[in-house]
Length: 410
Image (tube, rainbow, N blue to C red):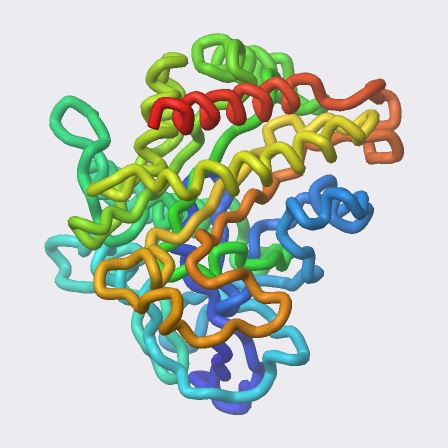
């Protein structure tokens, strides 16, 4: 969404209003929607360097890197705040501004302050002049707002026993990350320093009607070489107490479209940390279940892509993908020929040359989050490793085996 901030006289700066990315299922950094095909996230130099020196063989398994932008927490003369990015040249043309799904949902989730009758912290994301904006409030109130929003968001996905069984039409995790990011900007930075560089990356779910996303934390080690002793110990404990230690993989979050309920089943990283090996197997089964049946047609394509990635990782000497994630993605909207009432294959329109055959499931495997990735020639020259990443390989091998077991039982 391109907006021109004309709230202040003479201000003709053009910017892109950023919205929360509603399909973020894991991680702690806020991922924002830049446009339909692009997301952005706070820039970490080590991750930027990784993308800029990415081995050719890995490019098909990572989001396309599109460069960097500067993102501002902009305040107009009315006191409204909004996260606005300097647009790319090809996005500078004007078009009608309208509230997107993320804006609508975000507005519904905002808490309101009591007593004064004024708007509460981050209580409105509305169209002020030509931009949807956030209403600024004191830092202490912002922090209280984060607590209230987190409590509300938790209630969306957990029952009284903290079992995550509730189904909603969106995943609240991205909104939680967005709230935390805005709070940090408003409380930790002076007003003239509230800007950051962001990475621009491909929106890997843009072609999906109902994107089902599984975020897997890969490997047996999660701390980077630059971690403090306290952080190192904390991450080692998380790995030892989860499936990371024995399987080399744990669930960091997921959303699964339920065709019977017409909404998403959501799980977060806290759910994933508590899983046993058998619980992990059941969760993987659940990720492939649409509420009415197991999507068995997905098992073969997912395994083929995982095996292809495994071959690539085995060939990457010195790379260690500490704390990185792997996304498994498929469309909750079944191909037309498989859906009830869909066209018979003979009735389907002819496909373009080189396109995916009609009726085949659309699946994708993507590696993300490389802030702690190290390799020969990276920033941390004094800590280099020989051979491929054995922890990551262990995770891929176990993931493939579990999927194969599920397939053989059908």
